[in-house]
Length: 358
View 1 (cartoon, rainbow, N blue to C red):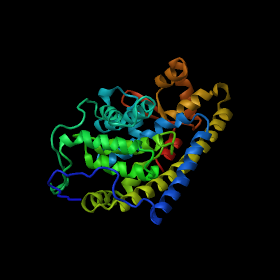
View 2: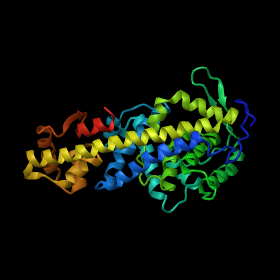
View 3: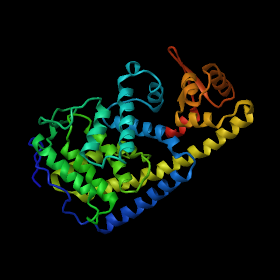
View 4: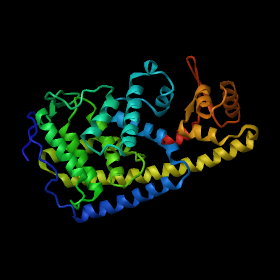
C-alpha cells in the first residue's frame, strides 16, 4: 500500500489482506458479541423500547459532534429541539440534524439497502443540503500547524469505491464476522472521504446502522462516539496506521474494544434508566394520584425536557391543564423548571443526569 499524505490516496478495495481468525481477533469478537447480545436482548425486553431512542440518539449526536469540535450539551440540545429552527444555536442545529439523520437512516433501512443511496440520504439530513458526493479534490489538515495529513482518493474514484463498499457490506459469503466487517467498513468510508464535509459524523452513523443491518442490534442505541472521544489520539493514529502501513488488525482490535466497552456501558445506563422509570412512576402515583397518567410518564422519558405546549400536544391535554400538571410535578420534586427567555422548560433532571453519565 503506497501512501503519501499530500497525494490522492490510491485506496485498495475491500476486503483487505488480513487474517480474520487470529487468536486476538477471535477473543475480541467473542467478548464484544457477549455484551452486544445482552444489550440487544435487554433493550427489547423492556416496555416501549422506542421511547428511549430519541434521548439516546441525542446523546450519541452530542458526542459524535464533539469529535468534530462542535460543542454543546445534552441539556442544551434537548432544549433547542423545542425551539423553531431559526432560534437554535449553530452547535445545537448540528447536533439535532445528526439526530434526524441517524433516525432517518434507521427508519429507511426497511426500504433502502445499506448503500450509497442511504448514506447520501443521511448526509442530506445532516448537512441540510443536497450536494451529494464531492466533485473536487480535498484534503485534511492539522488544525494547528496547517500540515496536510491526508489526501483522499480523487472524486472520479468515489463511485467505484462506494460500489465496492456496498458489495463488501452485503457479501454474506465472505466469512468475516460482522463486527470486524463494521470496523473495516468504517475505516474504508473515512478513507474514501466521499463528501466535502460531514464524513466523520456520517461514518459513525454507518457503524451503528451496519450492526443493525447484520442483526447484531435492533435499535440505534450503541454510544460508539463516547469511546472514540476518550481515545481520540489512538483512533486517529490507528486510522493513519491502516493507510500508511496496512495495519488493519490494530484498528479492528481498537474498534472491537470500543464495541465491547460501549455495549457494556450502554447496558448499565439502560438498567439505570429503567430502574429510575419505575421509581418515577411510583413516586408520581404516590404523591400526585389525582392526575397520574402513564402517557405523561412516557412523554417525560421520551423527551426529558418539555414545555407545557409540547406535553399538551403529545398527550392530548389542554395547555392550561398540562401546565398545572407540570407545575405540581415540579413542586413534588419530580421535575425541575428552568426559564430561558420566554420559554419555561420542565426538566426530568434525574433522567438527564443518568443519560449524561453524571
